[in-house]
Image (cartoon, rainbow, N blue to C red; front, side, top):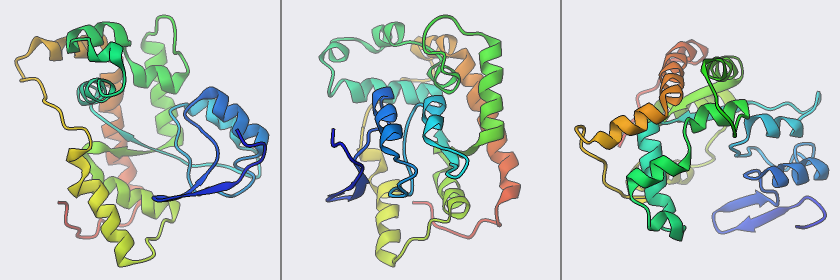
Length: 226
């Protein structure tokens, strides 16, 4: 809650003292001139529409995202929240799916967090992705981050930095939130798909966009995907 914008040094990097994971934090960042300060190279937020207010004609942003299969995302979220939320800890996966909400991706992109949504919201979300967003896929980490680096001009300053990236993306990725996945015959999978039918259609569309956006980039270099 500092009254001025500044950078804070942490063990894992240099950060700007704003929180873009809340609406209140985005409002505060706007009032402090977060983007205009040029202190940050990148910001992360789930609020696509609300965060657009941070920019102006002289300070424009580029959006990139990593899309994930909705089944994997929801199950991973369930096991992650169980570590921090006592209410979720006492819920079964079936109960969590029934109470957590549905079609989170479409709702977030369109800003429709409450009330019913339909095909028109899905089409609006597709248009946002098509026109505004560089798509990455969690199942295509290597190519996705290669595109992010090329598109945004990120240059790793040393072999040590490259080694750090590989450790985060590959070696340590699967131990961050280990959890079991239901068997393909488990009815819980059908329940997730039914409750998130719009998200599934959006995810399939994002895979299409990922293929189409390949023409924007230089041919992939041979890299080892661990």
